[in-house]
Image (spheres, protein in one colour):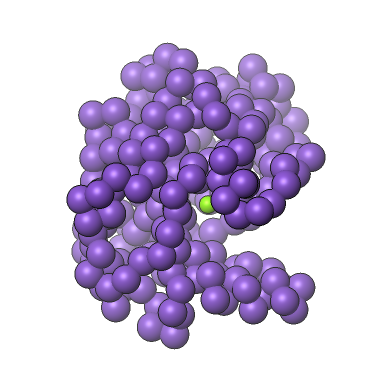
Length: 222
Ligand code: MG
């Protein structure tokens, strides 16, 4: 898979190698209600390996031994610089661009892991589980990080509408929080969590993702 060796995103026509991939869960109140979960006192964080990245250049091969692959459309941040123990203001200055992606989950594997009190790595980190439109939109195109909206269509039907004004933790607070545990670096991606409407995928489903002027398609294969 040549893609494994090309884990670069595009920003202002520059290729930026992806560093770590952080993901935030349970970050929209309405999504919490759907899941029957309560708000955590701090953001829920997990990671995906770089090998999980998929830019939609080819169909996403869903793992054949899962019967429950869920899609979650999410705003994705790329950092242009990093640091440690950042204030919210400093954290905001680290954002270089935005894209939209899919956090795919093998729910059946996750349920098994939860039952045994084991980590989510397999359920959240398999190849193709971190879909994202490769070309990021420069941060300047979205002057207000609390007013970014995005849409996700499944086979032509609107399924998810995201709006960062409904985030339980602001983008700045998310980055600041992460920086107190991880040294952040240029090329880090952050999946910021999914709004309501996440659901099950089947082979041959076509997902289109829209953020600002950017749109991308992801075809699911088995
Ligand atoms: Mg998610």
